[in-house]
Length: 329
Image (tube, rainbow, N blue to C red; front, side, top):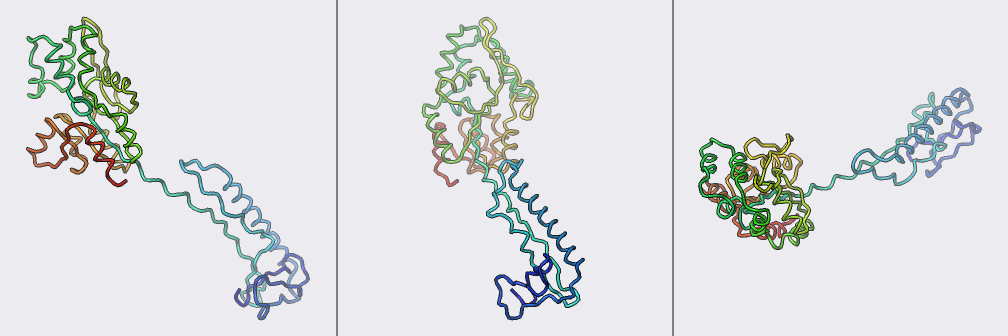
């Protein structure tokens, strides 16, 4: 304690000569003179009461739950007792001046880093084969218009082309389900998802196909992950009736589902994002992520190679999972 720093008990009603200095060398302690005015002591008592009120309010704030996701760290110790107010004597004409005791609430803990996100296509990516390609071979008549050619020529959207094809299926539901099961869902999907979760990766499916068969296969595999796809239902005699998703942040007029929008949203949250796909509709989303987090095969790999864009090739979806799990968090 520096010369002049005293605990002026005179301000709390003690006789003016009985001054105690806590934790200091008594040599150099300053004695409050006898002529300290009574009103000065009264003023400092009122200030001490105000400080007591402030401390009580601070304690109450510290006990309240924080409205944020992470609660404030509790105070390590209670604020000091106000009856030990330190007075600073600046000069003999102003012998006692109380200081305001600071009440410091520590900052809330730093937010944990956002988990990484793998955005993955379904048909031909999480599965070996594409439902559309199998349907053309096994479920559709041969004399259909070339809806795919119309799409590639820009006269139909991707959604319209698939919807037209699926609506021409006239096989029984059992025959259609047989084709669905022969799409070849990644056999190690459940184990891969557990490993990705442990490595700090979330997984979301974005598909321009139909949620009718996607949800069916994931449920049979015992997997529950977010899926953005086009809703639909199978009706015998009318085919697989695919509908556009309702308007929302990830709606796309062309695909039904805005895959690139899902990626942009995750990047906007500050997340590390990887993308895996195999088709032309995957190109925009794939180009939003770094090439060392861009996994491609099939038509997507071909178009990326033609444009000189880097990517990581894969044979099956578990290759993607193993690659990401082997990276530092």
